[in-house]
Length: 76
Image 1 (tube, one colour):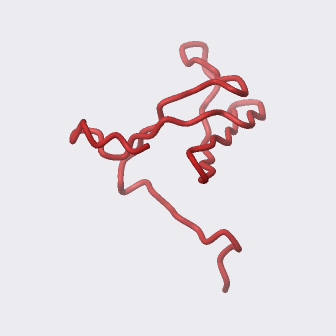
Image 2 (tube, helix red, strand yellow; image 1 turned 90 degrees about the vertical axis):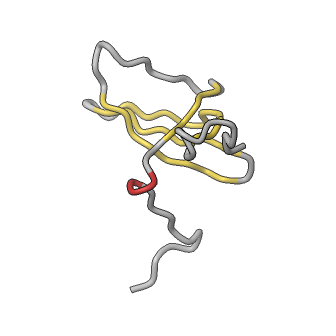
């Protein structure tokens, strides 16, 4: 569900949190978008909201910060 209505935010999707792991200074998340899984991290600070499993969130990112890997991994 890419947000095509806002050209200022072309890399925006709605996702559902499937996994959240607290690792001290960051929380590692895995979110589902249709048949895709997106993994991201968020620093743990008092000002940021943490998300629970089942929460619907809006994710956005800069195009230059995007990395896509094949499902079977990267061969050397």
